Image (tube, rainbow, N blue to C red; front, side):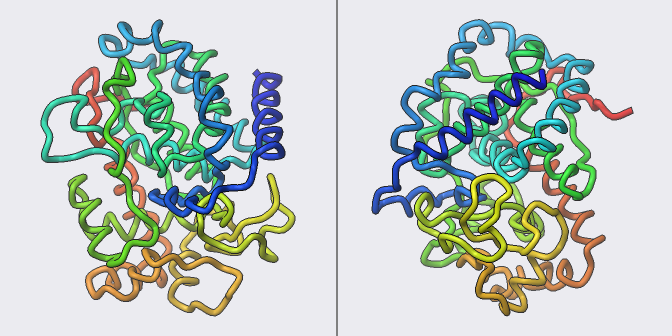
Length: 341
Protein backbone atom coordinates (compact mmCIF):
# COMPACT_ATOMS: atom_id res chain seq x y z
CA UNK A 1 0.00 0.00 0.00
CA UNK A 2 2.87 2.39 0.85
CA UNK A 3 4.28 1.96 -2.65
CA UNK A 4 0.89 2.72 -4.23
CA UNK A 5 0.41 5.85 -2.14
CA UNK A 6 3.89 7.01 -3.02
CA UNK A 7 3.16 6.44 -6.71
CA UNK A 8 -0.06 8.43 -6.45
CA UNK A 9 1.76 11.28 -4.75
CA UNK A 10 4.44 11.22 -7.44
CA UNK A 11 1.76 11.40 -10.13
CA UNK A 12 0.21 14.40 -8.38
CA UNK A 13 3.54 16.22 -8.24
CA UNK A 14 4.22 15.44 -11.91
CA UNK A 15 0.81 16.83 -12.88
CA UNK A 16 1.57 20.02 -10.96
CA UNK A 17 4.86 20.50 -12.77
CA UNK A 18 3.32 19.93 -16.18
CA UNK A 19 0.10 21.94 -15.73
CA UNK A 20 -0.26 24.90 -18.12
CA UNK A 21 -1.13 28.39 -16.97
CA UNK A 22 -4.76 29.07 -16.25
CA UNK A 23 -6.79 30.95 -18.80
CA UNK A 24 -8.25 34.41 -18.11
CA UNK A 25 -11.62 32.95 -17.17
CA UNK A 26 -10.11 30.91 -14.32
CA UNK A 27 -11.97 33.01 -11.77
CA UNK A 28 -15.11 31.15 -12.80
CA UNK A 29 -13.66 28.09 -11.11
CA UNK A 30 -13.98 29.76 -7.72
CA UNK A 31 -17.49 28.44 -7.17
CA UNK A 32 -16.43 26.29 -4.28
CA UNK A 33 -16.22 25.81 -0.53
CA UNK A 34 -12.44 25.83 -0.89
CA UNK A 35 -11.56 28.00 -3.93
CA UNK A 36 -9.20 25.49 -5.54
CA UNK A 37 -6.85 25.54 -2.57
CA UNK A 38 -4.99 22.57 -4.02
CA UNK A 39 -6.43 22.71 -7.52
CA UNK A 40 -4.70 22.30 -10.84
CA UNK A 41 -5.70 24.27 -13.93
CA UNK A 42 -8.66 22.64 -15.63
CA UNK A 43 -7.06 22.47 -19.05
CA UNK A 44 -5.09 19.31 -19.67
CA UNK A 45 -6.09 17.50 -16.48
CA UNK A 46 -9.76 16.70 -16.65
CA UNK A 47 -9.92 14.87 -19.98
CA UNK A 48 -8.05 11.59 -19.69
CA UNK A 49 -7.01 11.29 -16.00
CA UNK A 50 -10.57 11.56 -14.72
CA UNK A 51 -11.30 8.14 -16.21
CA UNK A 52 -9.32 6.60 -13.37
CA UNK A 53 -12.34 6.06 -11.09
CA UNK A 54 -14.75 5.58 -13.98
CA UNK A 55 -12.92 2.45 -15.07
CA UNK A 56 -14.29 0.92 -11.87
CA UNK A 57 -17.79 2.28 -12.32
CA UNK A 58 -19.24 -0.71 -14.20
CA UNK A 59 -18.26 -3.14 -11.45
CA UNK A 60 -19.53 -0.87 -8.71
CA UNK A 61 -22.89 0.03 -10.24
CA UNK A 62 -25.06 -2.86 -9.14
CA UNK A 63 -23.44 -3.71 -5.82
CA UNK A 64 -23.06 -0.20 -4.42
CA UNK A 65 -26.74 0.63 -4.11
CA UNK A 66 -27.80 -2.72 -2.67
CA UNK A 67 -24.94 -3.24 -0.22
CA UNK A 68 -23.57 -0.96 2.45
CA UNK A 69 -19.87 -0.39 2.98
CA UNK A 70 -18.05 -2.95 5.08
CA UNK A 71 -17.27 -1.59 8.56
CA UNK A 72 -13.97 -3.46 8.90
CA UNK A 73 -12.77 -2.14 5.55
CA UNK A 74 -13.75 1.40 6.51
CA UNK A 75 -11.64 1.15 9.67
CA UNK A 76 -8.67 -0.16 7.71
CA UNK A 77 -9.11 2.50 5.03
CA UNK A 78 -9.06 5.20 7.71
CA UNK A 79 -5.57 4.09 8.74
CA UNK A 80 -4.39 4.26 5.12
CA UNK A 81 -5.90 7.74 4.79
CA UNK A 82 -3.96 8.80 7.89
CA UNK A 83 -0.76 7.55 6.29
CA UNK A 84 -1.62 9.36 3.07
CA UNK A 85 -2.10 12.60 5.00
CA UNK A 86 1.21 12.19 6.79
CA UNK A 87 3.12 11.64 3.55
CA UNK A 88 1.41 14.11 1.18
CA UNK A 89 -0.09 16.84 3.45
CA UNK A 90 -3.24 16.70 1.33
CA UNK A 91 -5.65 17.65 4.15
CA UNK A 92 -7.28 20.64 2.37
CA UNK A 93 -8.09 18.88 -0.88
CA UNK A 94 -9.54 15.81 0.89
CA UNK A 95 -11.82 18.04 2.94
CA UNK A 96 -12.88 19.73 -0.28
CA UNK A 97 -13.55 16.35 -1.94
CA UNK A 98 -16.05 15.32 0.72
CA UNK A 99 -17.72 18.72 0.87
CA UNK A 100 -18.16 19.04 -2.87
CA UNK A 101 -19.74 15.61 -3.14
CA UNK A 102 -22.30 16.38 -0.42
CA UNK A 103 -22.79 20.11 -1.04
CA UNK A 104 -24.97 19.69 -4.13
CA UNK A 105 -27.95 18.64 -2.00
CA UNK A 106 -31.33 20.29 -2.56
CA UNK A 107 -33.80 19.84 0.32
CA UNK A 108 -36.69 20.69 -2.03
CA UNK A 109 -36.17 17.49 -4.05
CA UNK A 110 -37.20 14.24 -2.35
CA UNK A 111 -36.08 11.66 -4.90
CA UNK A 112 -32.67 10.03 -4.66
CA UNK A 113 -30.31 10.66 -6.39
CA UNK A 114 -31.95 13.65 -8.08
CA UNK A 115 -31.70 15.54 -4.79
CA UNK A 116 -27.88 15.48 -4.96
CA UNK A 117 -25.75 15.16 -1.87
CA UNK A 118 -23.25 12.61 -0.60
CA UNK A 119 -23.69 9.88 -3.18
CA UNK A 120 -20.28 9.44 -4.83
CA UNK A 121 -21.29 11.24 -8.04
CA UNK A 122 -18.15 13.37 -7.96
CA UNK A 123 -16.12 10.44 -9.29
CA UNK A 124 -17.61 10.95 -12.75
CA UNK A 125 -16.04 13.17 -15.40
CA UNK A 126 -19.18 15.20 -16.07
CA UNK A 127 -19.25 16.48 -12.47
CA UNK A 128 -15.48 16.82 -12.19
CA UNK A 129 -15.68 19.30 -15.07
CA UNK A 130 -17.91 21.64 -13.06
CA UNK A 131 -16.05 24.90 -12.44
CA UNK A 132 -16.18 24.50 -8.65
CA UNK A 133 -14.47 21.12 -8.88
CA UNK A 134 -11.38 22.15 -10.84
CA UNK A 135 -8.41 20.22 -9.49
CA UNK A 136 -10.36 17.59 -7.57
CA UNK A 137 -9.12 14.97 -10.04
CA UNK A 138 -5.92 15.15 -7.98
CA UNK A 139 -7.79 14.19 -4.80
CA UNK A 140 -9.34 11.32 -6.70
CA UNK A 141 -5.92 10.14 -7.87
CA UNK A 142 -4.71 10.10 -4.29
CA UNK A 143 -7.72 8.26 -2.91
CA UNK A 144 -8.22 5.74 -5.73
CA UNK A 145 -5.52 3.27 -4.53
CA UNK A 146 -7.37 3.06 -1.22
CA UNK A 147 -10.67 2.41 -3.03
CA UNK A 148 -8.96 -0.32 -5.05
CA UNK A 149 -7.59 -1.92 -1.89
CA UNK A 150 -10.98 -1.87 -0.16
CA UNK A 151 -13.61 -2.67 -2.83
CA UNK A 152 -16.40 -3.12 -0.26
CA UNK A 153 -16.46 0.61 0.47
CA UNK A 154 -18.62 2.96 -1.55
CA UNK A 155 -17.13 6.11 -3.04
CA UNK A 156 -19.71 8.14 -1.12
CA UNK A 157 -18.48 6.74 2.21
CA UNK A 158 -14.81 6.97 1.23
CA UNK A 159 -15.07 10.65 0.28
CA UNK A 160 -16.71 11.52 3.60
CA UNK A 161 -14.32 9.32 5.59
CA UNK A 162 -11.35 11.07 3.98
CA UNK A 163 -12.79 14.52 4.67
CA UNK A 164 -13.51 13.87 8.35
CA UNK A 165 -10.17 12.13 8.88
CA UNK A 166 -8.32 15.09 7.33
CA UNK A 167 -9.97 17.48 9.81
CA UNK A 168 -9.13 15.27 12.77
CA UNK A 169 -5.53 14.64 11.66
CA UNK A 170 -4.98 18.40 11.27
CA UNK A 171 -5.81 18.88 14.95
CA UNK A 172 -9.52 19.49 14.58
CA UNK A 173 -12.43 17.94 16.47
CA UNK A 174 -13.60 14.35 16.22
CA UNK A 175 -16.50 14.32 13.76
CA UNK A 176 -19.52 12.17 14.79
CA UNK A 177 -19.69 10.35 11.47
CA UNK A 178 -21.97 7.58 10.29
CA UNK A 179 -21.56 5.37 7.21
CA UNK A 180 -23.51 3.16 4.85
CA UNK A 181 -23.99 5.63 1.97
CA UNK A 182 -25.03 4.26 -1.41
CA UNK A 183 -23.28 5.32 -4.63
CA UNK A 184 -25.00 6.60 -7.73
CA UNK A 185 -24.52 4.20 -10.61
CA UNK A 186 -23.65 6.40 -13.57
CA UNK A 187 -22.78 9.91 -14.80
CA UNK A 188 -26.38 10.53 -15.88
CA UNK A 189 -27.20 10.76 -12.15
CA UNK A 190 -24.78 13.63 -11.48
CA UNK A 191 -26.30 16.96 -10.34
CA UNK A 192 -26.35 20.00 -12.64
CA UNK A 193 -23.62 22.60 -12.33
CA UNK A 194 -24.07 25.67 -10.13
CA UNK A 195 -24.96 24.06 -6.80
CA UNK A 196 -21.87 25.11 -4.83
CA UNK A 197 -20.96 28.48 -3.25
CA UNK A 198 -19.17 31.24 -5.14
CA UNK A 199 -16.21 32.84 -3.36
CA UNK A 200 -16.89 36.34 -4.71
CA UNK A 201 -20.60 36.99 -5.33
CA UNK A 202 -22.10 40.47 -5.55
CA UNK A 203 -23.95 40.04 -2.24
CA UNK A 204 -21.83 37.57 -0.23
CA UNK A 205 -24.11 37.08 2.79
CA UNK A 206 -27.24 36.68 0.65
CA UNK A 207 -25.44 34.23 -1.63
CA UNK A 208 -24.21 32.09 1.26
CA UNK A 209 -27.72 31.89 2.68
CA UNK A 210 -29.23 31.07 -0.70
CA UNK A 211 -26.85 28.12 -1.19
CA UNK A 212 -26.73 26.77 2.36
CA UNK A 213 -30.42 27.25 3.11
CA UNK A 214 -31.15 25.19 -0.02
CA UNK A 215 -29.18 22.41 1.67
CA UNK A 216 -31.22 22.77 4.86
CA UNK A 217 -28.37 24.38 6.82
CA UNK A 218 -28.60 27.56 8.92
CA UNK A 219 -26.51 30.61 9.83
CA UNK A 220 -24.57 28.76 12.54
CA UNK A 221 -23.68 26.02 10.06
CA UNK A 222 -22.56 28.60 7.49
CA UNK A 223 -20.16 30.32 9.89
CA UNK A 224 -18.88 27.13 11.53
CA UNK A 225 -18.17 25.45 8.19
CA UNK A 226 -16.48 28.60 6.90
CA UNK A 227 -13.97 28.04 9.69
CA UNK A 228 -12.48 25.15 7.71
CA UNK A 229 -10.70 27.82 5.66
CA UNK A 230 -8.15 27.62 8.44
CA UNK A 231 -6.80 24.85 6.17
CA UNK A 232 -5.43 25.32 2.69
CA UNK A 233 -4.47 28.08 0.26
CA UNK A 234 -5.72 29.60 -2.98
CA UNK A 235 -3.70 30.08 -6.17
CA UNK A 236 -4.57 33.00 -8.47
CA UNK A 237 -3.44 31.26 -11.64
CA UNK A 238 -5.89 28.44 -10.92
CA UNK A 239 -8.81 30.04 -9.11
CA UNK A 240 -8.54 33.77 -9.71
CA UNK A 241 -8.04 34.45 -5.99
CA UNK A 242 -5.04 35.10 -3.79
CA UNK A 243 -1.39 36.09 -4.22
CA UNK A 244 1.06 33.99 -6.24
CA UNK A 245 3.18 33.49 -3.12
CA UNK A 246 3.48 34.68 0.48
CA UNK A 247 5.94 34.23 3.31
CA UNK A 248 3.68 31.44 4.58
CA UNK A 249 3.51 29.46 1.33
CA UNK A 250 6.78 30.02 -0.52
CA UNK A 251 8.33 26.88 0.96
CA UNK A 252 5.33 24.55 0.74
CA UNK A 253 4.85 21.84 1.95
CA UNK A 254 3.86 20.47 -1.39
CA UNK A 255 4.19 22.72 -4.42
CA UNK A 256 5.14 26.19 -3.12
CA UNK A 257 2.99 29.25 -3.66
CA UNK A 258 -0.55 30.51 -3.30
CA UNK A 259 -2.11 32.48 -0.47
CA UNK A 260 -3.46 30.94 2.72
CA UNK A 261 -6.13 32.20 5.10
CA UNK A 262 -3.93 31.44 8.12
CA UNK A 263 -0.23 31.33 8.89
CA UNK A 264 -0.28 27.62 9.84
CA UNK A 265 -2.48 26.47 6.99
CA UNK A 266 -2.24 22.75 7.72
CA UNK A 267 -3.39 23.19 11.33
CA UNK A 268 -7.08 23.15 12.21
CA UNK A 269 -7.91 25.71 14.90
CA UNK A 270 -9.84 28.98 15.23
CA UNK A 271 -7.10 31.15 13.66
CA UNK A 272 -9.30 31.82 10.63
CA UNK A 273 -11.80 33.81 12.70
CA UNK A 274 -9.09 35.70 14.55
CA UNK A 275 -7.34 36.68 11.33
CA UNK A 276 -10.53 37.69 9.50
CA UNK A 277 -11.55 39.83 12.47
CA UNK A 278 -8.22 41.64 12.77
CA UNK A 279 -7.29 41.88 9.06
CA UNK A 280 -3.78 42.87 10.04
CA UNK A 281 -1.70 40.61 7.81
CA UNK A 282 -1.76 41.38 4.08
CA UNK A 283 -0.19 38.01 3.37
CA UNK A 284 -3.36 36.25 4.55
CA UNK A 285 -6.37 35.86 2.28
CA UNK A 286 -9.80 37.39 2.95
CA UNK A 287 -12.45 36.58 0.37
CA UNK A 288 -15.72 38.54 0.12
CA UNK A 289 -17.54 35.57 1.67
CA UNK A 290 -15.00 35.54 4.52
CA UNK A 291 -15.42 39.24 5.26
CA UNK A 292 -19.21 38.81 5.29
CA UNK A 293 -18.97 36.72 8.45
CA UNK A 294 -18.06 39.83 10.45
CA UNK A 295 -20.14 42.27 8.41
CA UNK A 296 -23.52 40.54 8.49
CA UNK A 297 -25.11 41.01 11.95
CA UNK A 298 -26.45 37.45 12.25
CA UNK A 299 -23.24 35.83 11.06
CA UNK A 300 -21.15 38.10 13.28
CA UNK A 301 -22.66 36.65 16.47
CA UNK A 302 -21.14 33.26 15.67
CA UNK A 303 -17.91 34.59 14.15
CA UNK A 304 -17.15 36.63 17.26
CA UNK A 305 -17.93 33.63 19.45
CA UNK A 306 -15.59 31.35 17.51
CA UNK A 307 -12.78 33.92 17.43
CA UNK A 308 -12.91 34.09 21.22
CA UNK A 309 -13.62 30.43 22.04
CA UNK A 310 -11.95 27.62 20.11
CA UNK A 311 -13.76 24.94 22.10
CA UNK A 312 -17.12 26.39 21.08
CA UNK A 313 -15.97 26.49 17.46
CA UNK A 314 -14.84 22.87 17.55
CA UNK A 315 -18.16 21.73 19.05
CA UNK A 316 -20.28 23.54 16.48
CA UNK A 317 -17.96 22.68 13.60
CA UNK A 318 -18.10 18.94 14.36
CA UNK A 319 -21.90 19.04 14.38
CA UNK A 320 -22.11 21.03 11.14
CA UNK A 321 -19.53 18.88 9.34
CA UNK A 322 -21.41 15.71 10.27
CA UNK A 323 -24.68 17.28 9.10
CA UNK A 324 -23.12 18.30 5.78
CA UNK A 325 -21.63 14.83 5.24
CA UNK A 326 -25.08 13.21 5.53
CA UNK A 327 -26.94 15.51 3.14
CA UNK A 328 -28.87 13.67 0.44
CA UNK A 329 -27.30 10.32 1.30
CA UNK A 330 -29.23 7.05 1.09
CA UNK A 331 -28.04 4.84 3.94
CA UNK A 332 -28.04 1.06 4.28
CA UNK A 333 -29.08 0.39 7.02
CA UNK A 334 -31.36 3.46 6.99
CA UNK A 335 -29.93 4.80 10.24
CA UNK A 336 -26.35 4.29 9.08
CA UNK A 337 -23.60 2.84 11.29
CA UNK A 338 -20.53 4.00 13.15
CA UNK A 339 -16.99 2.67 12.84
CA UNK A 340 -15.86 4.08 16.18
CA UNK A 341 -15.56 1.69 19.10
